[in-house]
Length: 193
Image 1 (tube, rainbow, N blue to C red):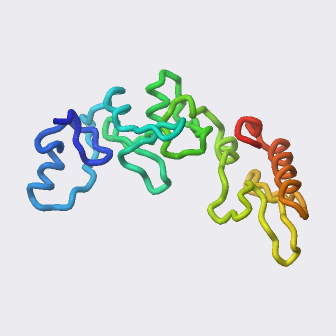
Image 2: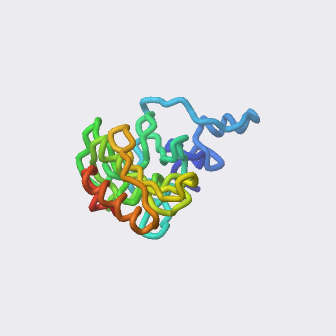
Image 3: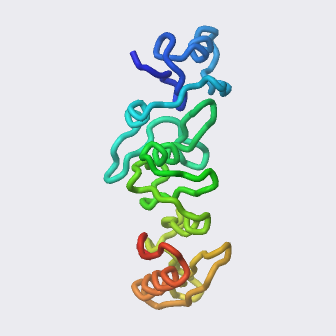
C-alpha cells in the first residue's frame, strides 16, 4: 500500500485501493477520475515521497507523475499546483524567491535534478532553448534557404530575430550562430552558445 494517492499529481494520503478518499469516492460512483479541488489541509509532499516519483534518464532525473500542458511536471503542495522542478529546487535547500525563474541547464522540462537547475531571469531562461522542432539542419539557429541555396543564421534575442548572415557551408553558419549567441546571451558559455 502506498502512503499517497496513486492518481497522478495527487499528494493526499491513501484511503483505500491506493487512492485518497476523494478519488476513491469518484471511482466508487463510477466517475472518471479527475483532479481534486485543492484544500488547505492537503499535505506537503515529503522529500522521500517526491524522489520516489522520479526516474533516471541519462544525467537527468525526470518527474513521472502529472505533466502540465507546457511539458513541466507538477505536484500538489498545500492544495496548490507547483511545478515539480521548483519543488525539487526548494527540497535541495536553496532559497527560491517567488518571482524567480528556474532554468533547466539540461533543457529537459521534466528534469528535477537540482544540479541541473539554477535561478535565472526570464531573459536568461528564454535564451536557454534547444533546437526547434522544425529545425532540419541539426544546428541551433541555422536553417536552409532553398531560394538562395545557402544556410541562414537567425538568433532570437529579447523577442527579436537577429540575422547573422548567409553561408555556403553548415560549419561556418554554425560557428556564426554560436558567436552571435555568445555576444547576446548572458549564460551562453554554459549551454553551448
